[in-house]
Length: 148
Image 1 (tube, rainbow, N blue to C red):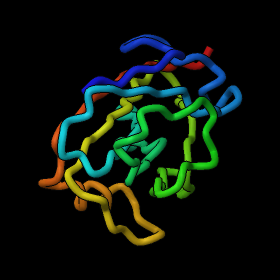
Image 2 (image 1 turned 60 degrees about the vertical axis):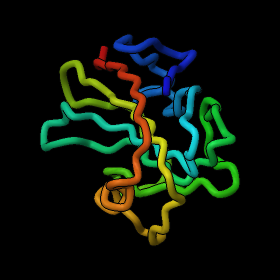
Image 3 (image 1 turned 45 degrees about the vertical axis):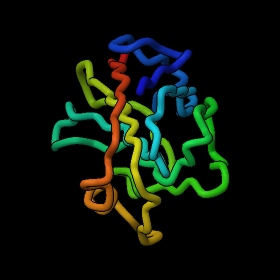
């Protein structure tokens, strides 16, 4: 499976419009080669360089395998896609806004052999637990961001 963005390449800088200092738009994402048997996909964007542990920027699940693109700045999720709370306690995307230094942002896409059943107030720990032993494949895209 492969995950890419037309906004930045793997290990490239994330443009400011996708950051908390810019327009805070989610970047456009596209994937391919989803394995047979995939019943849903999950997407996690996190910053492992945050000062007090990993900061979660975006958590989506139950993405139908028929979908292979998330448009730039998506706020209205297609039918069936669900979101978990990010580290701000909100649903949806929150862009990079590191307090200092250069941080890495990992976008990870998971192909799952099930459709997940999670409560409305699900958090990352709930998502990871539900995904356990259901992951068929994983793809990642890493961007970095540093305040000017």
